[in-house]
Amino acid sequence: MVAVEKVTPGQKVLNRYLYTGGVFAGLAALTIAHYTWAAASATEFEALADLGKQAWQVAPSALIAAVLSTALLVGWLTRRYVPVAAKAVYLIDTYTYKPPDRMKVSRENYIRGARMRKIWGEEALQFQEKLLNSSGLGDETYFPDSIIQEPMRLTWNAALEETEMVLFESVHKLFKATGVSAQDVDILIVICSCFAPTPSLASMVVNHFKMRTDVLSHNLSGMGCSSGVIGIDMARHYLQSMPNKRVLIVAHENITNNYYPGNNRSCLVSNCLFRVGGAACLMSNRPADRKVAKYQLMHSVRSHIGADDDAFNAIRQREDEDGIRGILLQRNVVPTAATALKTNIKSLAPLVLPFTELMKCVRDKDYVPNFKTAFEHFLVHTGGRAVIEEVEKKLCLDPADVQPSKETLYRYGNTCCAAVFYVLTNMESRVGAKKGDRVWMLGFGTGFKCNSAVFKALRDVNTLHESWT
Image 1 (cartoon, rainbow, N blue to C red):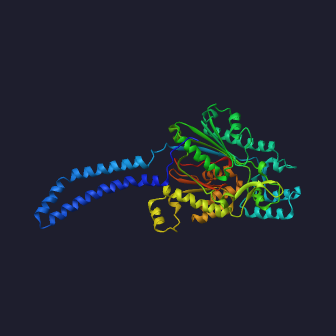
Image 2: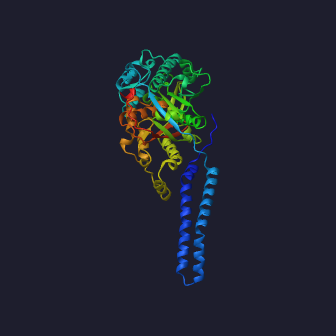
Image 3: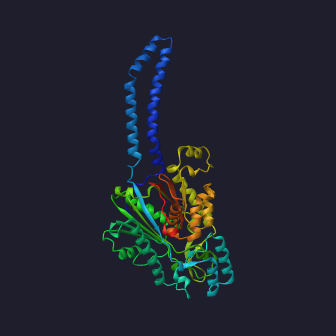
């Protein structure tokens, strides 16, 4: 990872108000000088009046000296506490994978197939059916061929086939849409939380698309559903420290490798939520790319509360009592996400909220900021209906604000690493973004993490994506 000087929220707030303070200091000095002369002129003591008039005669020089001193102080404080402005980072475009229709599985067909396989007992089947009906998922989400076919083929090779299909088509379609080729990519970031073959998924992409020998490739695993935002943050660090670069982010979660054929309820939750999906995203800091880019990345804030044991164990991959590997989701997932969100907001709020909202927070510690004063679009990752509704409640949002997330969950389920990108393409396809609109991308992940990315639309965006036609 390239070393980049970290900018704290306090430093950015200082940068925002320091210059304003300098201007007010100069105006205050001018006002004091004026009223000193006026008071001296009104007094009965002519000597004091003369002194005041003499002071007024030298006031311009004193004012210039005061302004220069203030400017020097502002400059010193800025150099001391505020890093140099970073390079602009652009998001050019995003592609989200749409699986073939043969892979669609309705809730009813899923339960019917599960009964035919006789893997689960009646109690486990009823639990899955109840969870599916309350999950927020619709009847057109996708399972890989390896799980649909009879018998199921939960093998390593079948998992590789699923991943290759999703990754390669996502990258190919993004290149086609942007006109960028594999040779134009300087940095590659591939994300898959629970599937890490050797050679890596990043190497598979490099090999398939015959990328350059000097491409900087990274393979992120084990980072959970918020890893899409982590990939964006990682790209930001690169692009703010290296000139004229393009970053390709590819996100996917493998369902074949993580399907759970056991009876532990906590592990069965993942079968009912996670579905096939993938995304590819192109980012850049090249000045020439600004005219074709959709957004500029303004901020990225990452929070990790994994030092707390309960938060760390909220979601874990482990073996059940029968030795069957699965992803265990504890009952405290939603309150843990709420705690992580609160932590993330403490760092994000000073960067995005207007001064009036910040002052309300200072006066009343229980005040919930109105984030609609900072954002026009809210892209919450599709961790489940309960997670989306918890964010809606904690941030005092309207149902319409989280509708892109609910629609994405209904149509594609939880696509894990790629989830936030699906919500982004849903927003672009359904309601669009106007030039200047601010977009908050929010993801939660194992560990436990809450990560945010803030974008600003550089132009009107009304893209009808293939995944939403």
